[in-house]
Image 1 (tube, rainbow, N blue to C red):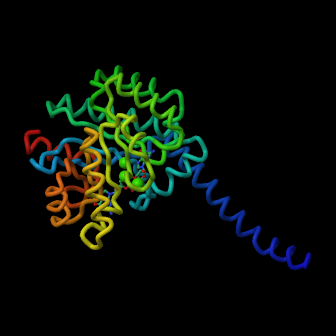
Image 2: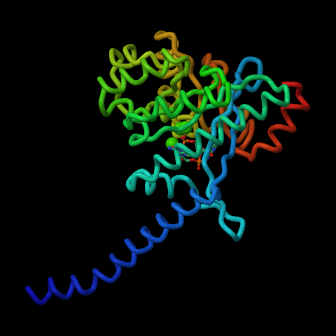
Image 3: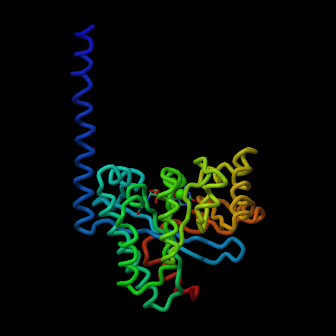
Amino acid sequence: RADKDRGELTWYSPAMSRASRRRLDLLHDLESAIRQGQLTVYYQPQIALDSGEIVGVEALARWPQPDGSFIPPDRFIPLAEQSGLILDLGNWLVEQVCSQLAEWRALGLGALRMAINVSMVQFNHEGLIDLLAEALARHQLAPSLIEVEITESVAMARPEDVMAKIARLKSLGLSVAIDDFGTGFSSLAYLQKLHADRLKIDRAFIRDMGLSENPYSIAEMVINLGHKLGIKVLAEGVESPAQATLLRSLGCDEAQGFLFAKPAPPAPLTHWFQETGL
Ligand code: C2E
Ligand code: CA
Ligand code: CA
Ligand code: CA
C-alpha cells in the first residue's frame, strides 16, 4: 500500500509540476506583456432596446499573441487575480479607457458611458477609488462616464464593505453595474440597499431564453425586479433578433451582444461613431 502511494506520487508529481510550471510561465509572460504594453482593449457597444442607439461601451481586455491569436481573458484574468498582477492590469486598463474617452471627446464624439470590469481583488483594494479619481481628473473626464461592473458574487461576498464602496463610487459620480446577475443569490433587501445603477442579466439566461420555461422566467424576473427597485436592466449575450424582440417586449432597457456588435478595437468603432454622427 505504501508502495502504491509512492508509485502514484512519482506518477503524478511530474505532471503537476508541468502544470504549475506552465502557469508560472504564463504569469511571467503576462507580467512582461503588461509592462511592455502588449495588452489591448476591445470595446463592445451597449444598445438601448427601444431606440437602437448606442448608450455605452464595455471595455474588455485582450492579450494578443505573435501568431495573431488571443489568449482569452477567461484564462489570464483569473491567473492575474490569484497573483496580484490584476492590480497592474487594472491600472493599465483604467489609463487605456480614459485615454480612449479623451480621444473620442477630442474628435467631437458624444460622451459615451464606459463600463469597466473590476474583479474581487481590485474591488476590495483600497486604492481603487483614488486610481479612478486620479485618472478621470488627469484626463479631465466627467466621472459619470465610467461605470464599474462587479459580478453578483463579488457584490455578495462582503456586504458591508461593498455597500460602502458603491456609495463612495456613486458620491464621486461614477455608476455601478452588477454583472452576471442571476447566477448568485442576492436577497431583495440587500439588492435594494446596494443602490446599483444597472443589473446585467447573465448570458446563460439569455441564451436559453424561449427554449425552456425556466430561463425565460429568470430574465423576466430580473427585469421586473430591477424596475421595481428603480434599476436599469441590460441583457448580455444577445445573439438573435428573436431574443431582442422578446427582451423588448419584456421591457428590458438595454442589450449587448453579437447581434448588435462583437467586441472590437477602437478604430472601427471610432469610424462608425463618426458615420452615425454620434
Ligand atoms: P463579462 O464581463 O461577462 O464579459 C462579457 C463576455 O461575453 C465577453 O467575453 C464578451 O466578449 C462576451 N460576449 C459579448 N457578447 C456576446 C454574445 O453575444 N455571445 C457570446 N457567446 N459572448 C458574448 P470576454 O471578452 O472573453 O471576457 C470574458 C470575461 O473576462 C469577462 O466576462 C470579464 O469577467 C473578464 N474580463 C475581461 N476584461 C477584463 C478586464 O479588463 N478586467 C477584469 N477584471 N476582467 C475582465
Ligand atoms: Ca462585464
Ligand atoms: Ca457578464
Ligand atoms: Ca462573465
